[in-house]
Each structure stands twice: as C-alpha cells, then as structure tokens.
Image 1 (cartoon, each protein chain N blue to C red):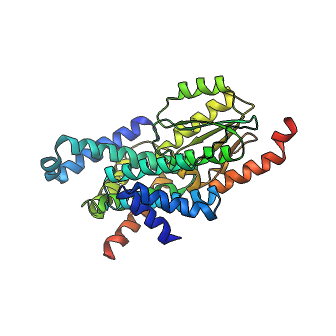
Image 2 (cartoon, rainbow over the protein chains, first blue to last red):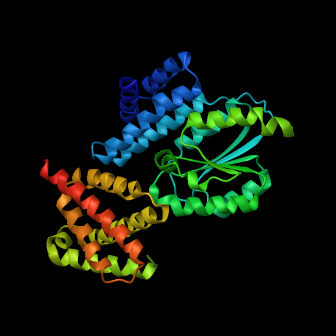
Image 3 (cartoon, rainbow over the protein chains, first blue to last red):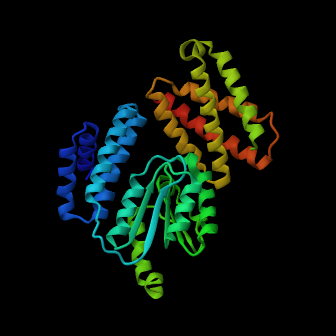
Length: 214
Length: 122
C-alpha cells in the first residue's frame, strides 16, 4: 500500500490531476469509500505533510496537492439526492485550515443516507453557531489538526453542547487521532480517531438511538 | 502559567537570544525577531497544553516536529537546545505552582536530551 499512496502523493505534487484521479478510481473499483479514504488518500496527504516538514517541498507544492485532492474527493462524493432524514453539520475549529479529513467524514455520513452540510474551514464561531441553530442537526462534527487548536476545540465543544444539547458532538482530526482525548467524552460528546471509528459510530447508532426515535 | 509569566519568559529569551547571536538580526532583521518571539510563544503554549492535558507526548511530539522543520531549513538543533535552556533558566525567576514547574522542567530536560542525542548521532 505504501507504493500506492506515495505514487498518489507524487501525482498530486506534480499537478498530475488525471493520473491521480485514475489511480484513485482504479482502487475505488475494488474497495469501499472508507478504505480508499483511509488507506490511500489520507496516508498520501500525511506523506505530503511530512515532505513539507523535512523541507523537501514548498508550501505552494503542498497547497497544489491539497487542491487536487479536494477535487478528487468531490468527484468521489456519494450524492444520491435521497436522505434518511438525519442531518449532520461539519466544520473546522476556528483558524484550522486542514479540511480534507472533515470532508471525507461528511461523505461517510452521506454514504449512509444522511444529509450533510459541510462548512469547511474559516468560518468564525458565531456564524457556525448561527448555522447550527438554524439547521438543527442531529450530529455536529468538528475537526482540528494542529496541536495549537486544543483550547479553541475545547471551547467550541462547550458552546455547541450549550446551544444544541440534544445533538451529538463528534470530534476528530489529527489531534484526536494522535492523542485520543477520551477525557472529553460525555454522553453526547465523542472523540473519534479515524474514519473507521466514525463508520462504527454510525453503524452503532443506526441500530440504536436514531432508529428508535424515528 | 499565566499570560504575564509567559510574556516575561518570551521577552527575556528573545533578548538573550539576540544578544548571544547578533548575526541573527543582521541576517533576518526585525522579521526574524518577530518569528523568534512567535516560536517561543508556541514553545510555552505547548508546554502549558501538555501540563493541562497531562500528556507529555504533546510537547515531545512538538519538539520532534520542530527539529525536523528547523534542521531541514538550516537551523541546527544547537539553537533549539539553547532556546529550551533559556526557557528553563527564566522560568526559575517566575512564580508558579511547584508541581507545574517540575513538570515543565522534566519535559524540557527530556526534550533537550532527545535533541542532544540527535546532534551526537549525526
């Protein structure tokens, strides 16, 4: 698998959209969307991050790879137009720019028939909150990558819990992936370390809470 | 650490750093100084977060990352070690809960050992 994600990373960094897309689509033929996201695209982008860390690529290269990856995720996105009536909203914690994982998470929900609103990065807390209050989602998903964001992440979880106490708050991103942050978990808040964890959470809830109440 | 403590440490570290290395100002100007200040804000924030979360990894991972980013861009581990030692030194001049102080001292020491090991194995 290492060869595949490194090949993908190299296509992304060289701006080879067509090759990158073909590679992903080829793997998609034999795998689930979660597997493609988690086993190929995520490690490819982590690899891009490591190359920047080691000064082997520039910020511009990294942004080019991100833009192409974003485009590929959009093309893979499962949009059937039909929903099970459940709603989820997705956003990055303030100032966090890394949004690809969050976008993959939104697609996992869509794949299971949920209506997903993806706000992405750069939306100030008060506007996120206004959107949440208007939309009244069943689940709020928030993500942060850089460790600097821990205080902001903690704060927004508290704000959401207050604003929509009935909703579930799912917390993900690199911080949770690396450190677990299980101490934040409550009856309504859950930190999830991977896309597979989100999928398990959705399967679990499908058989429990959401079916009972619908 | 309260804001005043952090500001005190950052101010002192930046001052000493630029006294010890006047070439830094000649080479990078005020912009470089601003970066050194920001870097130290980040070091202290990560120390503080580590303590709050009681996760040592939080700071040591940050040090590993910092080492990669700086060393690959021509800033040797020696400068990071020097910077961490200054934080240790000026931290002693501040008022702080003893448990918290010991935690930071231990974390900085562990990270310095790691950086020294990296320097020696090169």
